[in-house]
Image (cartoon, rainbow, N blue to C red):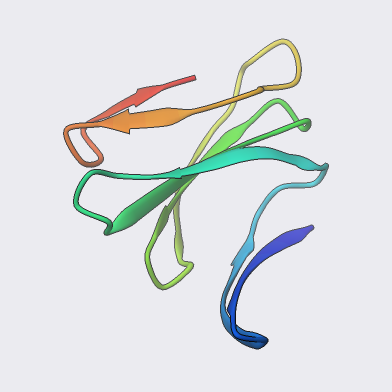
Length: 77
């Protein structure tokens, strides 16, 4: 499953990595990182180019949200 960011009809970045529906995606304060949460019980950390940097697994159910604090140093799910 992939998530796309579009502006004026032009695809800018595709974020791949979740196997079920996306619940939320949030940018870091500096705008360089994106963390996403999904119904697949994981959170993914991407850079602004769409490169998957880390997959956070081990949650027991669907994640409704995820946030980054202090850029990418602390992830809250």
